[in-house]
Length: 346
Ligand code: TRP
Image (cartoon, rainbow, N blue to C red; front, side, top):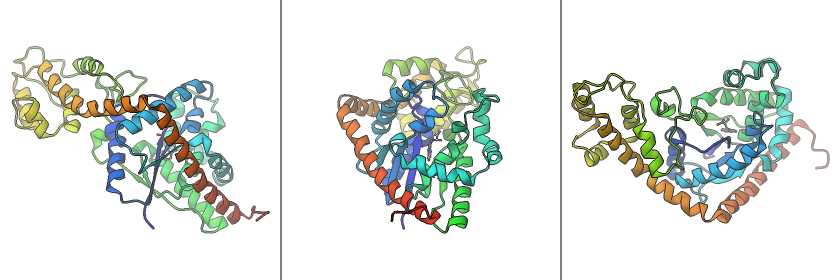
């Protein structure tokens, strides 16, 4: 059997360059390599509700934003099945049976969940739905018999938990579910792109990101505001490359051909050397980065515009994908019920 790839995102905001370099780019690569039987991308609106249940409008508003981000980076509905989690109710049913296989203390030990609980200051009032989202994520994965899960490394505890549930299920009810593996971006900076301000992570809430949907003017302004080296005051001062966001971004977004095209340097290394010696100004390096980012973002913007003007097409892609996904999930749910022995009318 070939690979079945599945991944997803919570629709809580527009996707940014961090998402692009950390995961969307890889998904496009996987899609085009074609080494799979099926590839699914799920908009995890139900999971997003587990910590935004009091603000469903935020999820609704962002569902199509995220879908437009997917399509605009070149994810192709002819190769990928896109679907909406909440519309595949089989996932909820699977979750219910898997819940019996996981203890409360196991859920409380999940490091990603622990972290989120701290960040969201739930304190003692943790919604059970939120605590159980790793179980629901296991349902997302196993319903499609997915074995390759492209995710960020913060999601590895979810993969581990999924495989534990699969093992427990198969042991008690007989071989039914398939185990999975995370597929990670290898470049460490790309895995966790820092924000424009040098903050540990690009994020919507920190307002330190460049969104795939930002206009050219917005990108220019943001690049000009990037954190470089506070001791690099005059052009002739020697500058630091480490921790300098312009160089960090050039490291992951540029090729030497682009450096040649947009500067007088032959390579990024030459450009770094000059900056370290002194004599290369911040505005200049920012303009080079801006040109390189624009080369990436311009076609993304154009695709987005096309889909924005054809929202009926976008809706149709999601609708068709969701119907297909549901059929697959139904099959797995039937197998699961059969294994447990609750297939009374079969
Ligand atoms: N938890 C993931 C995130 O926050 C989203 C997600 C939900 C997911 N279900 C999934 C990812 C299944 C991979 C597979 O980004």
